[in-house]
Image 1 (spheres, rainbow over the protein chains, first blue to last red):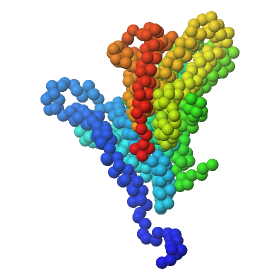
Image 2: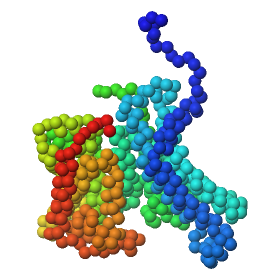
Image 3: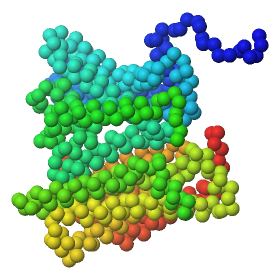
Image 4: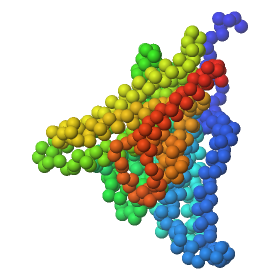
Length: 300
Length: 265
């Protein structure tokens, strides 16, 4: 064939299904992550707390185990109540933050730094699919760390306590599931947005912590100087804690939130403000992603 | 120095450092305006002493533990690391300039930027936090302990920039990922109040806290976990911090002397 006839011809073969295409990014990402010894160790270590919780539930429902340990009244020592499940979620969510700041920065920034985005988008793969594919890596891993063990513990408690316990405490299950998803979505969006804007991976990871801790410090300064509690709007863990409190306990609450996600007594903000602030944060992250995830960059 | 100052001051990477420095000033200016407006009718809702304690808390918990720490991390760890990322470090290494001078020049440029940003932020925040008291605030500044406090806060800010600057310049040179040592230092510095008195002394924040003019009460339930240690006198804390920073800088200069750059790694 003459060279001049070798022009562009689109691919005419069969395409894989959209779901299979979406799975390509997480598949390769998981392969990469699997090679990291630190990550594997961290991920396995993150199950220590749920295992301890499972042990507590088991021991509480096993009279012979209690007798063996020589413990009387252990069921009153650690009650399986809202604090128990919120503490589990709070602790696992903090570990999820570490995981997100370790994995998140490496998801998008290498593609942008090496101008590889056009290679993805030249294929039958949209920007949304690209973002969803990258995000699914974080969503799956963080789900396995937060609501999955939480729900398993809920089921274990229901099984040992008697099935009637579950409908009576369905709010706990809803709180674990939806509360974890609120946190997971915020973390995933923030990690991807920072990864897209900060090309240096360590800096993006550091900035992720900075957003949480410096913003919380800034909120505390606002509260201190202005003698108000509106500064908590800068504190992401406070906002998420408020949402969790409502999910777990409804309008009347007996606790002040989970570990790391506390809502100080007397400093409560209207719930809609917390939702609005979280939505604004997600909106900013989506805008940042939309600005950066483009097939071609216009350089002025 | 001129080149470095231009780069560090107008760095696109460092926009967030301006936010860190100017945030508290915006809050204290807002406080001044709001209180001045409210104060006209009903009188001040609090005293100068309360504002002084609030500023001390803001200085300790925001400036020292977050603002200056993360700001210094951003400025100083980027001095060499940014050149490596942009693949421009070899230009410096090829110039007829001693490596020690290069380290000193970069450090001084970073220090000037950090002191200008955070020093002016501290001074402005202090001057505006009580501005709504009017003449009594001026009297507090000129004839009371105000000016002494302002001087002490400025000195602590400069020392914090010097100390953290040296730590992060060295970590930027030694580590491919300076965030890991930064995270370790940050956790250590924040655990300081709860450490035994001997371990307390192996940190920058302990000496800086000793120089702060107003003590901040720690709220419950954390107050029960705090371990008290005698504050270090001025004549030990200041030269001690400067000496440690100098040692770190000398080590950084020695490291830079043998540094080779390969961008492919």
